[in-house]
Length: 235
Image (cartoon, rainbow, N blue to C red; front, side):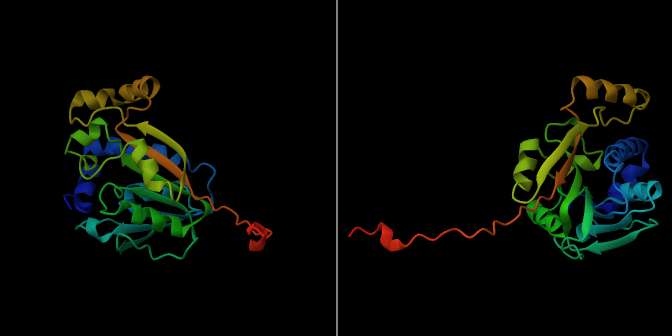
């Protein structure tokens, strides 16, 4: 891989990374207003966001599953369960999780559909999958001074194609309209740029948040009347 957990951690400790972290936290937390007493699993590098959620809502049962390919020498303190796992296997029981949060995952794994299938396996019926992904034509994917400039990026059509056999897209939004520039003007004007971009160019942000739902359809148990084959045979 071109990037690991140490690189992502270092980015979030920078001034630019702090702005990104705040924006992502805001987007994620807006979907937790009505979620209480839930089992939440982070999949990817999700530590900055799970820590925030844990502080905001102590009723959540939080665990973090970090794929081994992202492993790096990061000395972080976790106030939740944290495990290094195989990228395509979550050590959790089927239908045991209410919410899965994914950041810095789908752009790096070789087989993203295998990760989606594993998310589907552990989610409860009507469970939610929240993911932050770089938008394919967004400006953040064009700079390598941030984690979103590495790996693959997604258009909304590509993401829908990725999840179509497992999940239903319930909500999506583009955000992060300010550029990835380490410049004092960017730090002073990022709130204004974000508001203008959100109002006039709502689909042109650098990142996307996608909220998906696991829908389990009821089986049709009604027995169909069998028609004898001889009825179709000419006499």
